[in-house]
Amino acid sequence: MIPRLLRVLRLSVFFLVSFSEFSTAFCGKNRFVSSSRLLSSTDSPDKSSTSFERIMDLPLTRKADNHPVKVLGVCGGIGAGKSAACKLLVSQLNVLAHIDTDSIAHTVYEPTSPVVEQVRRAFGDEIMAPDGLIDRKKLGSIVFADREAMRTLEAMVWPQVQLEIEKRIQRIRFEWLTSSSSDASLSSKEPVIVVEAAVLLDAGWQHTFLDAVWVITVPQEVALQRMMENRGLSREEALKRIGAQQTGRWKNYMSLFLCN
Image (cartoon, rainbow, N blue to C red; front, side, top):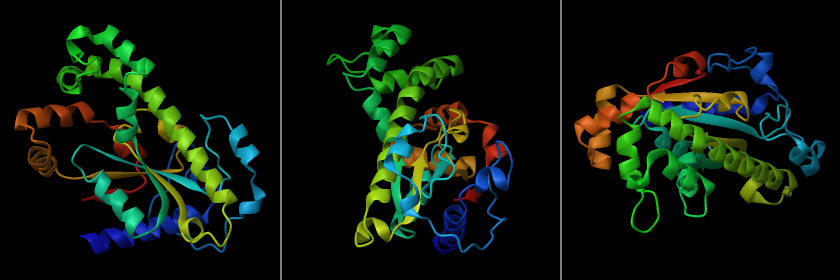
């Protein structure tokens, strides 16, 4: 499985870094490049053509279409293997960076975050732990059983997560642009930033800062087994979480469908 997956990822990364405006030029508005449309190119990124000021002047809600460092979104349901695919991209294909939105989302629930008070008001004091933090297990039991409650939570959390992702993308791009050719830690890497997020299509990020989207999928029974074994969930709890994440957008916007 891994050698075959690596071959697909390698070809797709080559395609991603070879074209500066492939997202609109080859697929049209709101569509993404298919792995079957691989073409060769002699284009090479020119670090000197873009200044940090130009990057920072770009609105946070707009893709830097001409930027040589591309942003790849990796999504899919819980238990599908998104993290495994991203680890392969980092360890085997040497991409610039991997941004895990789950870790960013955790910071949104820290006591100093304005989101905490919004969530408390929306869901009540019963979701608060004695130490003043949000009890994420209690909150999860509510939102995974009620789609409207999930939408309410998403409307509070997603904008904060997106803002932090885009800040990190800007910082990584700046570091790459300003690195010297002798800096092997950056110059030897593929100019691709990988953003891992189950919710990226539902959040609309494919229209903002992503250049391409990959969908990772597995049969539901495989996902259930992984969740029960790795997360200690009951079958009923796992089914609720899978149901809460089901979205038709995956099939509409996918550029690469990987069965893990």
